[in-house]
Length: 114
Image (cartoon, rainbow, N blue to C red):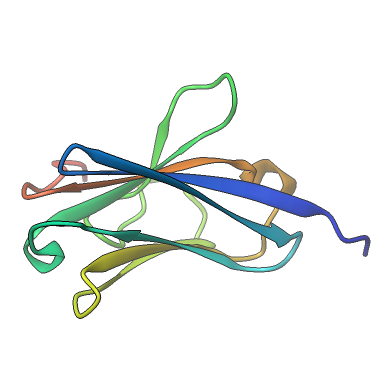
């Protein structure tokens, strides 16, 4: 299999601050993107992850830390590390269509998405 890099960007939106980072990986690999809250307690908040392909609308891929909406593959998973005050999005088995911007949102309210 040829080495094909994929680029995933992360725009973190926490408490009005933003930070853009990027990660890359090869097809079939796993990548993890972290979102660290600069103020407040991540343990008492909820985290949502969104994905946006160029020229398309944003779609919710993880809500309330680790839940997936209907239609989102199991290879997308969310987790939290309260000791580091951070959340993570892991995409396993990278596919070409995973190249996108990913957004982390932290709030003190549940998403209301079920």
